[in-house]
Image (spheres, each protein chain N blue to C red):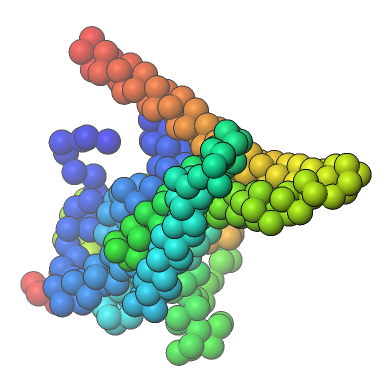
Length: 185
Length: 201
């Protein structure tokens, strides 16, 4: 995060705490599309995704006074969106069934150097085909709002675990995209 | 943040094509959430409070513009009644405004409501003292008169101190926030300027 962005977030949070309607609107307008994109990757039904986004804003507006580190605004917003989506998913599935991770791999620092994803359309399509746990971490990664450390904070796991999950998720996405490409050839 | 080239994240977000009906419904609900609009029941309540403000202003005006027997009212009594009338009218306008717009700005308007309400309470107490208690006290022995004076002074002191406290806390809160906000704005502009200069070089 650049210094300019950090100051902007601090200013925006301060104005929201003062109850300025324009600031609240600015917060909603600037973040709703990316939060919706993330939520919709976690929740398949679009109507539910909009409902979760609305619920996310209710929580944000109620608790913005408690955000002591405005520079962590993106992490905070994604965390609220993620927790709200998970609460929604828990109503349909058992807790363990929502995210199943295989985290045996320990060192994946350089494992994914050969994987490159530069076609947004294909990635968007591929995200719809991989499992929920892979989609979760990959969407946060591809949206580029958070660093690996921040993704780890959002998911409440160590950075190493995020790297490991990203590795598997990228492999899964690559496999799916390859299969799809082979299918059409 | 004004990059002409889109980031991968932005390109990805553009791939999402939301259903216009769902989006419209969401937008309306979020808008309503930001507005904090009052329902008809609350608006009617504020309208009643506005009328009460007008009713409170009438006795103050009557007293402020009247003469007691052949003598003019004392200057202090005049100041109290005129101030009471002004605060009652301020209350009427504030409540009327909330009832008419149907919007309640919790942070600002509740602070004004408390301050004006306390002020009206004080002036009514003072009014009551001047009209009923002091005329009796004047005919009573000096000791009783001084007790009445002390009571009036204590009540007045309580109300005035509370109003002052409310206003001071509110002002300090605002000053703190505004100063921080201005400092951040300056900081933001400096960083922006530094970025522009870097790009020009």
